[in-house]
Image (cartoon, rainbow, N blue to C red; front, side):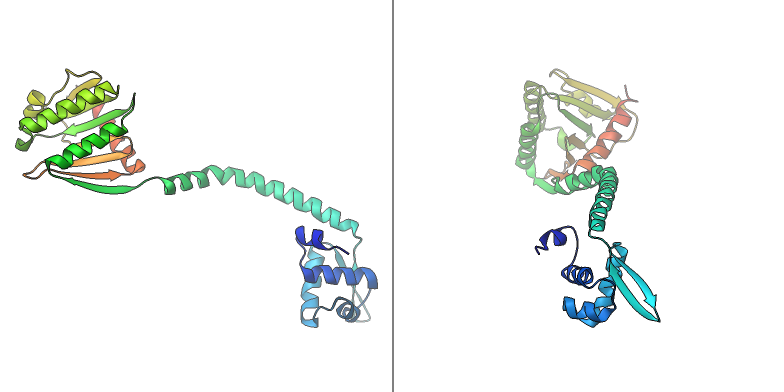
Length: 251
């Protein structure tokens, strides 16, 4: 008899042998089952218990001796139908947690990276990479702070060119500036470029921050400028939320 189908629906080789032996011997003690199936005595009772759970073996006691009898093979169809019901229920329950599992997978697959750009050329490289990222409708958000190092023609010109190219790509810019930051308001307000908005706030802002898509950059404008960049969607979303909380309350 081809027993592969029984294996596919969840029966072990031992269960198949014991059940087949019981079908042939009828109501019997364990001895004939052991002889017929070839299964070790130490395993037979354990297997019989599993078959009883599946509803395929019944047990009776006569004169203190245990007897076992196989249920009709039709019961295997009932067993399959019950398994189908259980699988449908499990599938329904699994669907409820599927979105959460997919979200975890997506988060694990997302790019997370830390970079540092050093020197004026490093800052230019960072802004070139930002321009490559920007598409039509994207946003460049920035929180500026006053620093004497920014009062530099090369830096001012670099930002001017950046915003011109940003506007050409039809990406938006929103700039937040502390109301006391006169340097930025006077020399680094590029409102002459398209899709550019500039607001001032009394709120103290974090040290020069730029946010683009999944990227947050922190600027240190010393003798040697540095840009510390974190590429992480969740981190960027938190900074973006803070930016808009301040933006919506600013002039």
